[in-house]
Image (cartoon, rainbow, N blue to C red; front, side, top):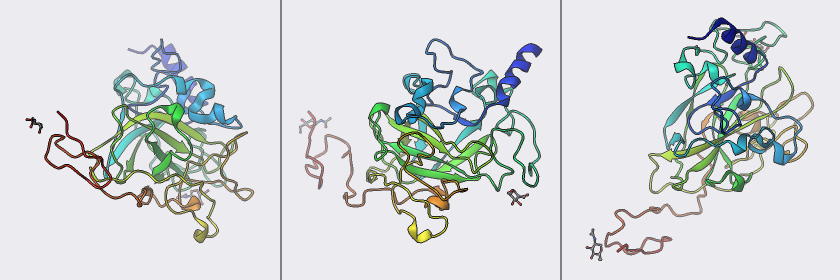
Length: 312
Ligand SMILES: *[C@@H]1O[C@H](CO)[C@@H](O)[C@H](O)[C@H]1NC(C)=O
Ligand SMILES: *[C@@H]1O[C@H](CO)[C@@H](O)[C@H](O)[C@H]1NC(C)=O
């Protein structure tokens, strides 16, 4: 049982919090200290603002890039399917802590009306969703790199593969997945991304995961190099098509987007992302050939583009 004092501390800790994903494969699940598995941490939720590139990249400045998940713990990304994660202000109010006893339908572990709204000209006092209501919320996104080593990931190898409009909102969020190909045995590196649509400091979120694509088609193509996105809310013909990079905004270094005064770049049509699975992110110059002839010991000796091999 949790003591009253403890609960008071727990909820006090959530008040100044923001929002992050709590799911398998996450970095900083128990905080940044590898010797402590903190069930009441909110280290991963804090936004990124005016950092050097080295510092904002996968939350390096708070040590999260050096706090990987346990060996073998991956977020499963089902190719051509969907996956559901928890969005919350603190691990305490998710199913990753206290057997889920503090979790509700909402990211703060409290109860709210379905049409929760701060009212004209106001932002929700919750302070962590950075919005007036559900429809004014921006969007969140996931990106994937086929580099298993987080340090080897680059902006060009990390492509946004899924977006969800009007999130974060409820605790559970489901994202759709395009025809991603399989990761190497050591897994891929994924990032959860968000730029709030006003209601607070104009900052951004980038959170690291070890992930694996499941149910991948043997003929799935590799990603194309991720391009710099443009702000195209005023003219959709200016939107960049195909694989796009995460939005890097309001940092000291590494920014890749500027927007007109008073506007915010968002992982939605404002920057060229239609909601859902991003199906145009693949290198279509690569022939669709099986990446792994199976079984390995068949008599097939050549696939176009795949070296013939027989195991013995
Ligand atoms: C949500 O907030 C926006 C922005 O303040 C407002 O225009 C809209 O009417 C609100 N939606 C609802 C359903 O109240
Ligand atoms: C694999 O191929 C080799 C060489 O062709 C053959 O001798 C062996 O029996 C095969 N193994 C299996 C399990 O089919």
